[in-house]
Amino acid sequence: MRNNALMLCRVCGLEQAHPPWGEDGLSPTYDYCPCCGTEFGYQDSSLAGVVKQRERWLAADARWAEPDVMPAEWDLGAQIRAIPLEWRGPTDSHCKSLPD
Ligand SMILES: [Zn+2]
Image 1 (tube, rainbow, N blue to C red):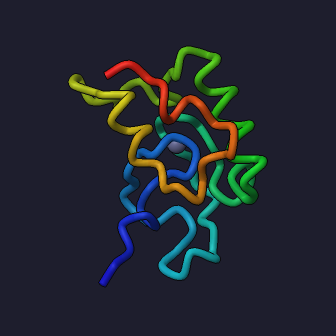
Image 2 (image 1 turned 120 degrees about the vertical axis):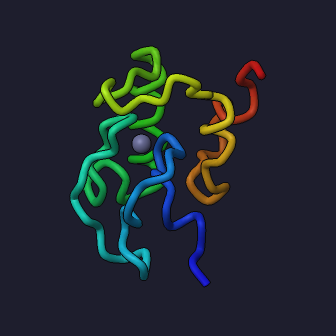
Image 3 (image 1 turned 30 degrees about the horizontal axis):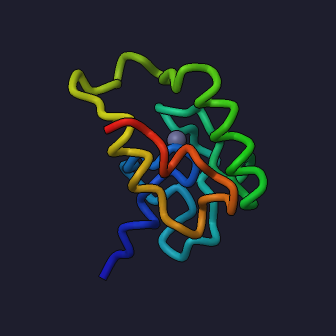
């Protein structure tokens, strides 16, 4: 059974077409997330990197790196709440304090 967390961007929580870190979670694809622009295997290779990249992305109004593929009904809050707990920083308030 596929672990759903493997399909999500660690930074923004967007579900990807392919697991960003491979089926084993250890083999990054070096593709880019169309939402937050993270390069898998680069900015998201450590928790500190993930948290920093997420802060940078949110500080820039959570803009899509590829606006063309942004869903019309995109829900930032719902997407961020899907980020696996292991990829949230201990002081990561963004995931808890977003408006519904
Ligand atoms: Zn992302």
